[in-house]
Each structure stands twice: as structure tokens, then as C-alpha cells.
Image (cartoon, rainbow, N blue to C red; front, side, top):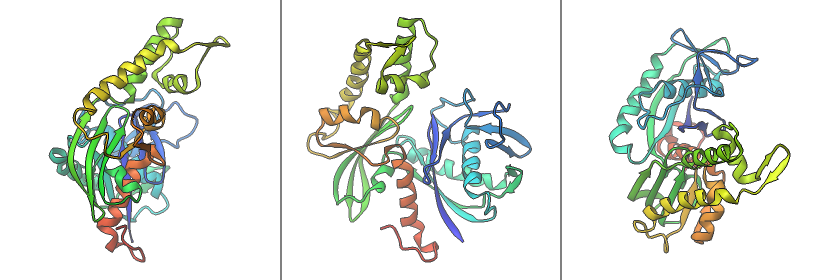
Amino acid sequence: MVTIEAIDHGYWNTKDHLRKIFKSTYSRADNSLSNKNKIIINGETYYFGVEDGIRTGDVDKTDNLITKITTLADLAMNNINQPNKERILVVGLPISQYNQKKDKLAEIIMQYNECEVIYQGKKFNPNIKDVCVFAQGVGSVFNIGIDDGEYISFDIGSYTINVVLVEIINGIPYIKKYNTWYDGIMILFDKIIKEVNKKYDLNLGIEFAERILTKGLSVYGEIQNTDFLKPILRDYLENIFSKFKPNYPHAITPILLSGGGANLLGGIFVNCFNNSMVLPDAIYANVIGYRNFGLQKYGYLLEGRCRYA
């Protein structure tokens, strides 16, 4: 039996179509109280998804060790009781890398079949039958049923923002224009947390920034006025909008927001562009779309399943 599985290799988090999520990190030392995140690959032991682990800021992650660890870890977690099942894997790349890197990424992931993998004391066989690489941003279009026409997909990730103008014809998306900007939500979070630490003489990590923006700030039990952060948020958005507005037909085209930053910034977008909407399950919109595309492309291999489109 063949299954269709999908993974979104985010710079900050790794996500899959089953809505599993873990940090795109690894460590060689175990600081936890369990071996849940322990995986052995070719005799080397790694602990994936750990706090303060090693992560990458490399633009090109196709041949990165983190991509290998997170891919094999996700597959092993989801299939540990079916270690010999065949699978087709759908993954994504920033749309600016898609044409040049998709074949390289598919080839590298297929080489994972040669790895000896042990997870939770059991041998796991990757058994990847094929790899399909899809464009980030476009994946989210396959997450919902939409009519034919033009749409702007605005995928706000941790390190990248992928903007795509697509036209849907008979249910198939055709890319008309695209950009990848390295202005993801972590750029905003980094500036926010630096300003908070400076003002209150704190040493908070970047992971506290979203909480401060959504729930406010309390220091030593006293609620603080966070208006001093508004110029940072304004400058961040103005930078993005200055690149977006002159280059896309934003006034006449529905804008679909997805990615980890969509829920946080969605309200502001809707105020600025009332033809925009945050997609359901925005953080998983791309990876669910990847799998839906896989079902469309490979559905004939699945017994008892109809094709997605």
C-alpha cells in the first residue's frame, strides 16, 4: 500500500499534513526526560525539535543536515508501527528557489532511503517511492476549494514571505508572478524583543515576542504600555507593503493569507486590504495543500481513493 505524506520544512518549525509540528532544530545531547525526540541515523544519535538546538539560517536548505533529520524524524513518528509501508512524499521550496532547486531536493530526499534509521528502539525504513516538490505559497491554494480566477497567495513564514499571483483554470493553478522576500515574521520578533529587553533591562528570547504582541507585557507583575512597539510594527509592515503594492493587482484580486505570521498580522491586512482573508489552519495551509496536490497527482495509486481534483 502506498500513502501520500507531506512535510513543510520551515526555518523555525517543521510541520506535516497531520498537523504535527516541532522545532526545526537538533542537538547531539539529550536534555529531556524521555527519548521521544531521539533518532539514530547511520549510527549517529540526534535529538530533534529541542529548545536551544542547532537550526539553520541558510537560504538553501536542500542539502542541509536539519532537512535530513527533520524529514526522517517526521516520517518515523507517523509510521513507526508500519515501518515497511511505501510512501510518496510532497515537500516545498520557497518559490524563488523552486525551478532551480526542486530536482536537487527531490534527489537528495530519495537518497534518504539508504539511511539506517532507528526510532524509539525500532528500525524504520523510509521507503520513499517518489518525491514531489511544490512551490511554497502555491500550496495554500490547494488547501481550500476555490473557484477559477486570479488570486494572490501571501505566505508569511518565519524567515521568508512568498507572494504568488496565480490563476486557477479548471482547478489547476498557473503562476503568473511571484516573489520571495526574506522578511519573515522572525525579523519582526527579533526587533520587538530587542526593544523590550533594552527598555526593561531584560534578557528575553525571541520566542516571547509573539506573546507580547498578542497578550501584552507584564514586568514584575505590572502591566506595561506597549505603544512603544507600534513604530516597529508599522515600519515592518510598511517595508512589506512598499514591495507588494506597486507590483501586484492587490485592489482587484482576492488575497489569501497563510503561514505562521498570518494569524498575527491578519487583522492588520484585512484593515488595509478588505479583499484579504486568513485561510483556515493558516499555519498548516501550505503542507495540507501539498498533500492535496499529491492526492491529485498520485491518487491513481491509492486503492479506494478518488483523486482530489
